[in-house]
Length: 304
Image (cartoon, rainbow, N blue to C red):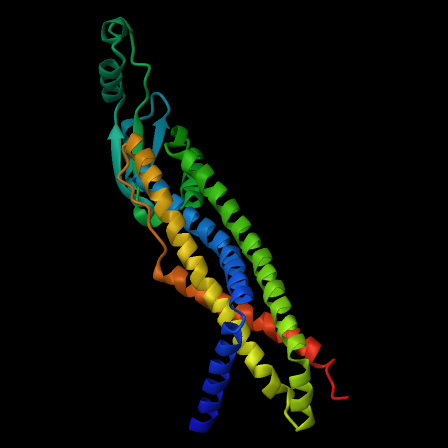
């Protein structure tokens, strides 16, 4: 086992030496891979930060239930108790028609004009404060539709319905990021495959000699696979640096923008999870590209 690991370490060091002997092409390949991986990573982090902004802005969602005129007090209390038992409900507040009228007088400035009304035109209402566990827009929409079917209810309204639109937009952007990441991953495979192909052609005579003395395809393939993985991982490191620099440049303007809306949001940078994903993705894509290129071209090289 020790000898097996030692051989792999020797091949790894030899692959590093091969890449170091061509610093220009290696650096160019690593930079291209880094830029290619940085773009979807940047979009992913921006979407993640956008979700945090929405959570900070929306606070705790609430549903306003406006009751029909002349609903019996017993029916109102019964509905209030029923809504309070719902799993989506954190707390509930009953606003009577008299309280609603007094609040409207205070806020509108038409207090004296409203005093001439013979009856109160405002209905009673129930405000449902949604729990954190039920903050999903789909859950709140289902709750609103269910409440609107009650005979005592005239209108049920989610006061932060605009958040639903933002959630849908973010889901669309997330899908776009996945598609973009797949396309750019294919681009990484093409880039590393081309580099591996050139390396094979440059070492054609060496490969023919190795085959003459009985070297297996697996033995010949190994240094190229390590080379692909190394380039992919170095490209991921380059992507991490690019993303970190870009986020630091955006942090100041975003903080100023949030300050205009009285928000205390601080943009989160690249996290360990994203770093791990980039390193793994770079290594896997580099290995897959090298494996594809070497397997195809190695079969064409036979000793003369």
